[in-house]
Length: 276
Image 1 (tube, one colour):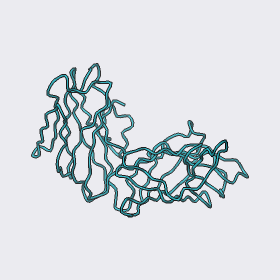
Image 2: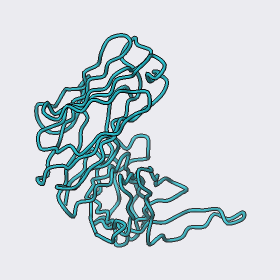
Image 3: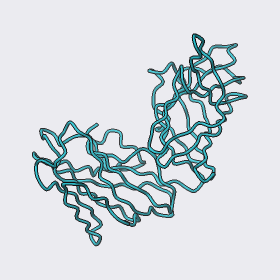
Image 4: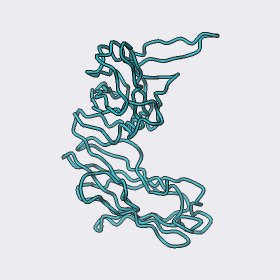
């Protein structure tokens, strides 16, 4: 992806936040990125920015802008490499969406990642979207949920599975799952024990900070038992995910997972996310 984006996950209202801007590759027809300028959104209070070896750091607090520029062609970021430019600050106390506009300067041309949707928060269809950060209320999990789906079932079938990708920006533990579609929802692990595939319940699933943990067929997954009715392709299943952070603070996230067979399951859970 060519876009300049933030690391997956949301931020809790009123909290400190580390913004890591990920640069996928250089501008169109360019070979290297030589400059990054981040325009800070209203309500974001800058604390500091992280220096990068071989780059000049220029913090313009009055203008609300942080700039990095390569000191020589040798320290520029080649288009085949990914890089992160990091700053820290505090997000507003009110939930909402923050848009960080980023100007990327290359050896050939520029790319201004500054487009914001006219309504809503989806960047679908935007050619040069700004970097998006969702600020959520206290008690709402900041975990990023993507590519979620539930396997369809047939009449008389009592169980199914749900799958997704989870990324916790500061680390978390998945400690519970519930859905009105099933009497029981548990995180399970399928693992080879010698020549036998065995499945066991996982009361807690660790989500290391910044690392994507995948729930997939044949691995970690959400086991749905005592289905209330068949899960029909093209419908969605509401699901509540419950988390704890390192201090034991609880949070939850409500998602709508499309029913299908995997590749045809449709939009990701991230696109259907509802806050609680």
